[in-house]
Structure formats: C-alpha cells, structure tokens
Image (cartoon, rainbow, N blue to C red; front, side, top):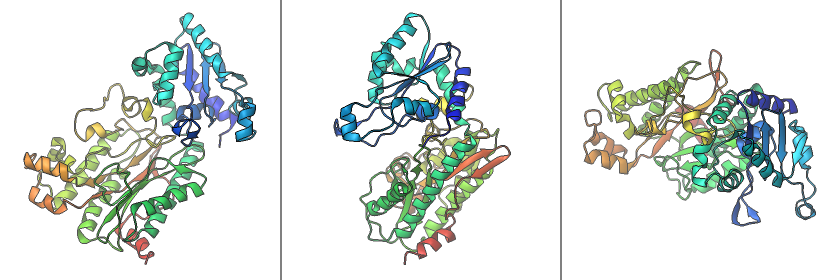
Length: 466
C-alpha cells in the first residue's frame, strides 16, 4: 500500500529544504538468503526509503539532487527470466510514477552518478547502513572502507530525516492505529486460547496467524513466555502450567510498514495468584501514572524516572524495597527489578529509526544519552515530547535470579532492598504492560481499540477459555 503521489513529493521537498547542498543517496534493501540464494527471507524495504518513495521492491536506490532539484530512482526492469518465474509485475517506471518520480535509470548507472558528484566536490549524504549487503554496496560506491561507513554517514541528513519522520501525519496515525488494532486482536486471541498444558509456541502461532489474516505480518519476533524475566525471550518451548504468568509482547505490521507494539501479562490459569495480582497492580499503576504525565514539552527521561519512582513505591508496599523512593531511584536500586527503559518511539519501525542512532532519535545535542548507567543506558527515548510523536509506555518488573544472586552477594544497595523478601519472588518471572500513545497538542491519546488491562478485565477474558 502506498500513500498519494503528493505525499511522497511533499516529503522529499521537505527533506531537500533541510539538507544544505549536494546529493542525497537513499539505499533500498536487497533480498537476503535464508540458506541459499533463491530461498530468501520475506522482503522488508528500508523504512526511510519507504517513507520517501513508498516502493516495497528490492534492489533499488534513489538519488535526490538538492542543487539541481532532480530525483532519480535506480533499479532494473524485470528480465524475461524474472517474468517466467514471478509473472509480470509493475515496471520500475510505473512504481516510480506512483511516488512522483519521472526519471529512472539502470542500477549500474548509480556508480557513475556518485563518482561524478564526488569528483566535482559535491557532498554525498547517506545514512548509516545496517544490512551487510548495503555496507558492501556503499563501500564499493563511495570508496569508503566498510569499517568507516557508519562514522562517515551524514549527520546533517540523519537529523533532517529524524526531525521529519518523528512527527506523524494524520494519514500515518491512521496506519499506525490500524497496526495497533490488529495487535489488540492478536492479544485477545492469545488470552482466549492459552491453557495449562499448551506450549508457548502454540499460542505464539495463533498470534502470528491473526497478524497475517489482517493482511499484515509481525512487526518483530513475538515474545510470548512464562519466563518473562528474560527481557527479549524469543524461545517458545515451555509448557504453560497452572500458577504461571504469561507475558505476550507482540505487534502487527501493516502492509504499508507501520507497526504496533503491545504487551499484556495474564495468568496461565483462570486467575492471578494473590502475589501475582499485587505485583501486577504495581506495574499497572506505574503505566497509568506515567501515561497521565505525557504532553508536549515534557522530557521522556522524566516520564521514565517517574515510572521508576512509581514502581519503587509499589515495591515498598510488597516489602521488597524500603527508604525514600527518590533516593532509591537516584541510586539505581530499582534496577534490580526494572532493568530497561519505559518506552521508545514507534512508526515505520517498532523502535522507530533505531538504525539512525538512538542519540539522534531519542536525544538531542544538549541532552546526551547516558550510555554507562545500568537502566538508563537502555532508555531509547529521553528528549522533550512534541505533538505528533508516537511512542510506547511499558513499565515492568523482572525478577532475574542471576542478577538477584549477584546483587545479594555484594549486599548491593541493601539500605533500599530487603533481600530476604526478594527470595520469595526468585522464580516469579516477569510482568510488563504496554500501550501505544500519540502525543497531541494538549496531551496524549492511547491508540487502538480497548484491550483488557486491569486484573478484573483480564480474568474476565480468561474465564471465556473454560
């Protein structure tokens, strides 16, 4: 699916206006083999290329000549061999025309175009590559050593793209909300299916099925596990048992490439245990309290720290923490239980524009990312919020036995942590609750259809299973 021709033309005009001079090179993605050349992974176009051209086809590149006001898409037309195997598809010219580009050239003409620009002393702006094939291709085209490509990427272009892609247009919000609504359906399907005795894989397969039925796919590998303390657990081999809690972190990607990203935690049986319910309420309160503070002009770093304080206050009611919450968070005591960030930007990528660098996407020249402090180094977003941002809010509690053992052995921050009480949660697992949020001119809006979130709502859905 593509937006209107005018949308892509306007996007490129804005980009040109925000890069001083020279040419902009935007690389599309190639197909990637699974185990031999013709057996490839499902193709996914580079998100920035999608944003400015909307063409989800492999082996393309584009040059935007800022000084001459020209845009050229480089790629090859189908050969008769391609047609025999794949059938007649749109020509490159037809695809380019839909994005408002009238000039196309063969793929092998790109090298000469770049060489001429470089010989004339014109800047060639490109974004940092993230796929091996584009590392190699860019090195061949520019003469820059592969290991120097990332640092040679154009900061001016990165900042221009980030500024533009961060503010979601109304039509983008519609697509994101479509992805979120499908994600809601995925989560309800999981809640209505899971039972003790089933494997995680059986439930995860249903989640993927719902995404594909909606003409989409997964926005990222599904995290569906009874071992929720493993933050990015993609293993689906455990069997659900009575007394377990299940984390389902899954989201859909629409045909246009926009993502949803939701997490819900539910009991493997009909109801939460008392301990699970009390811990769940701590996380849910942190989610709702942090969400209520969202509005333009507020730093997300402060939203994160607020979330950490709410988790700390809740952990104090459970007897796991003690002392002043502000002091505990400042010391990092909460990170025994909450090791990651409260949220991230979302759009054409589930972690939007992460390939361009978190310092540029989530921070600013005056607010640098803390890359050394445990907890804060995993916070992908810290800068002031603006209307049009789409982001996640996803606090959690994660009881990691290995981390508990290490901290306990060192008696680390014992003035804030009751290690004897923590032992009762040693095999607890984890809890996360996550929503997708649009920042509006005067606050925020939770995107998507309502999805069971309170203990009562989740247990009501679970009751449908039996």
